[in-house]
Image 1: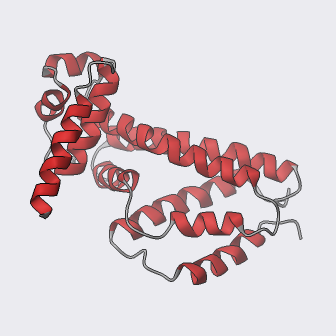
Image 2: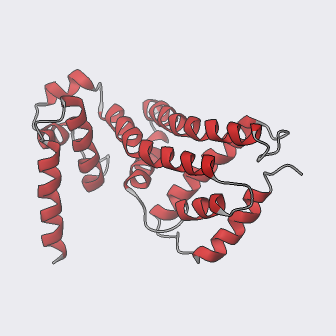
Image 3: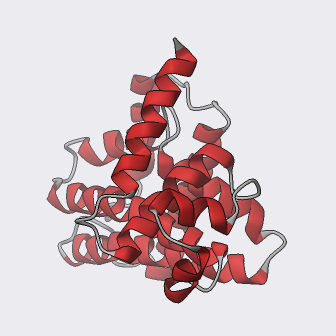
Length: 210
């Protein structure tokens, strides 16, 4: 049953990658996400991505200079919606309502998302590739900037202590994002959610003006 499910999933994924209504770049990125998740970065060839999208390798290189650039674009594409949603939820919460704590707890627990798995691939690659390090920093920077806009607004509204340095907050959020990725990817995000919310609440409340 498991293998049948994977086969159906792969057929549907391939069909989506070759949708003629999508532009070339979009099809390539979708194909890259599918193949990276199936084979990992190390097991993926440029030809695999191009073939999945219905193009030649030459067509791929017109839009992306390397596999690493495609991985960065895949991370941005997968993360944009998630990070925007998190930022919007942060921006709409009220002090003391517990919503932000629940948001943090939910993000750092449960099974890994596609974004988690892609980021883990990029982290491993960044340890030995300067190009990958730059691509990952750019991708993560885009996510953190979305969050920081909401954090600055919350600080201006008096929800966050104005004495807290914005760059220090950025550093903490980057560490939290990567820590959550590793915890979930390794299957360690199994802490009781209510207990996790309680701890997260203490941490979030610590950001409020004293």
